[in-house]
Length: 182
Image (cartoon, rainbow, N blue to C red; front, side, top):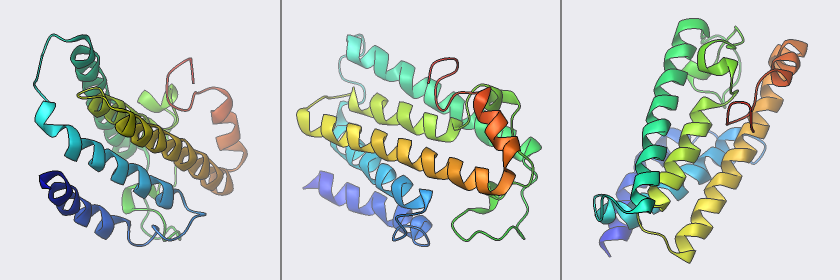
């Protein structure tokens, strides 16, 4: 019961943040919302196992994923703020203020991966999953990962619509989530 209450409480700010896009299946925000909810479900089910068996293989991999996830999101946000030139006059209600960049960000961590913020959420998903695995949580993790992939796919369509060939060329020299791999 505590898990359901925690999930409900954590979901409230995500619903408020996502309200504009959570009903638009053609927006990257719809799939991002589902992924965030999956991550919250994973956390609500696994928070009590966070520090159990610290030297267990799953725990070590989990912590590595969580650390890489934290680094990736910090590096991505810092790079967006440095070079993205967010412009609140950019017309797109599905984007948050920091997403309304008028300059293509292709330096720093973005030089290697196009979606460091979504990559960090993938790391978070699997890092939390590995705290205490089950078939149900595996299904939730797979759903979260699929939604993050779809989120990135829709985001790329939006970026191509805004930046055009400049973004297409950027896609040829970078990877989606993992440098040099995927």
